[in-house]
Image (tube, rainbow, N blue to C red; front, side):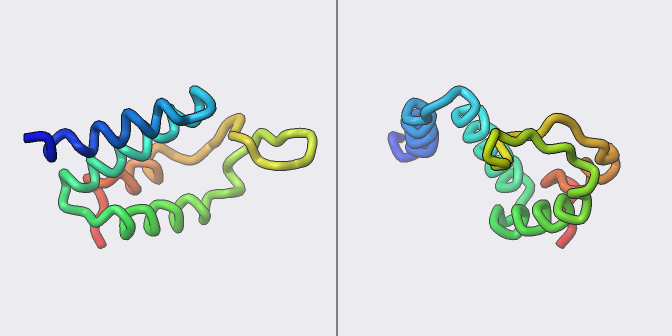
Length: 95
């Protein structure tokens, strides 16, 4: 029975170890994508490669937030269409 909760325990510990709320939030987002891909029978690494590939094609549509050194620390806004975003959801991935 304990093995069934191991993933959640690892996630909880990782989130507690995050330095910021933003880090914990991002970790929760990735875990959600991981579980959704798993639920739809999509291998997560393959899913991430496809999603990153599609999003890279639309980089010009994203306005990034940068710190004083020019390092990207987030994004301000994007104009990526809902159709593109929907196409990279795990339940729509056809590889």
